Image 1 (spheres, protein in one colour):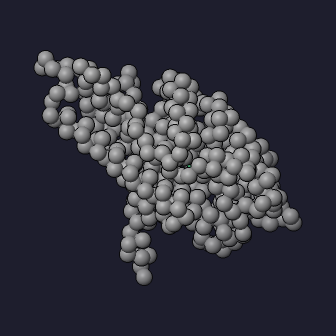
Image 2 (image 1 turned 90 degrees about the vertical axis):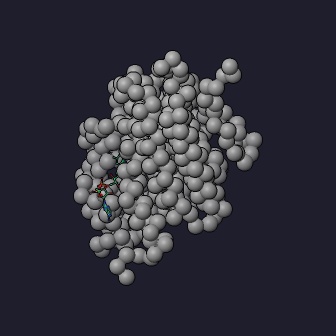
Image 3 (image 1 turned 180 degrees about the horizontal axis):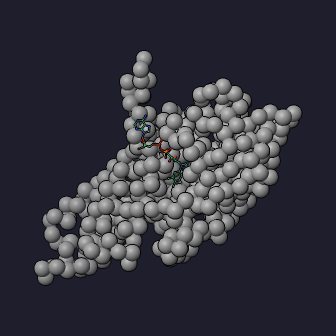
Length: 390
Ligand SMILES: Cc1cc2nc3c(=O)[nH]c(=O)nc-3n(C[C@H](O)[C@H](O)[C@H](O)COP(=O)(O)OP(=O)(O)OC[C@H]3O[C@@H](n4cnc5c(N)ncnc54)[C@H](O)[C@@H]3O)c2cc1C
């Protein structure tokens, strides 16, 4: 019988360089990330050394300019790297996506001087970033945020609490959206705050259902003083910057979701071929064969959708609607596929002896972060039918 163990995904990549990059990532994922994933997730250990290795390997600044230490890769390549990392361990894939999101405001809106000063360390100098938009009382309605930045001479003084911050308490830099003016989206400004700034502190990490290795914490800004040269973009431009960062960030979440889904499918296929009931492998039963076929089809559709959105972005064309569609479809696919994988493993699927239950717990958060899937539907509908309440 031919060996039908799941093969690596046959990826469409634009260059030999991109193919080499995927090989490098698979090697790191297999040697350094996957072997410790289950144990460290269980114990809530963040793999800081993996992020140092990724930084040294040029994998923490992939979509940014080579001039500042980035990898200058198109999004269609960067996202497939994320997918591979997330398949090995979501904490790592999502962590790279959040770091990339946190670097975006400076890379896209910073001045030349700010970029020269800060970007190389962020993109390849071993630093880890966090993105601070959400607050305890403003999640989906992010424009109602209350953290304040008040001008004091050449400085700004930031006061308030950010919630749900991935890498909160361990990040080296925080991209922070704070209110500097009127209520609503036009009164918000973005700042780059160093992790060791006086007055910045983090609460204990949230006790989460999954991704326990990835610290998510409230971050307190108690009179944190930053000079005006740490303001990113114009005063009042912060919300537009935050949303523009999220258009790209959502593609990262979509790619991570397909990574988790692919890992769950591979697990289900391997198990179904090995497990025998009624004298035959359970993979012989049409009830399961059709489930596997549907899982694989949804994954391929999701990959095609996020890549189509990425290729629009790479071509400099509008992609926000497609990014929301990709986030919605890919994360719903991850949830469905991971749930079905647990079903295919039967009772064993419900135990921590197999990774299927971890994939199921991890998939859930992807339907919530960077705009819940209800919010993605609102974004898509706005593109179709215009703003609500006109
Ligand atoms: C593990 C984790 C990591 C995170 N990392 C970060 C991070 O690094 N940085 C950051 O800034 N934030 C982060 N977040 C926050 C995340 O983006 C928010 O949780 C998310 O935006 C939802 O906000 P909320 O939790 O306040 O829910 P709410 O906004 O209170 O929503 C509650 C429910 O109401 C629904 N809802 C709200 N408004 C509408 C509407 N108009 N129509 C229909 N339904 C609606 C939502 O879809 C949801 O189902 C993280 C969250 C988690 C769980």
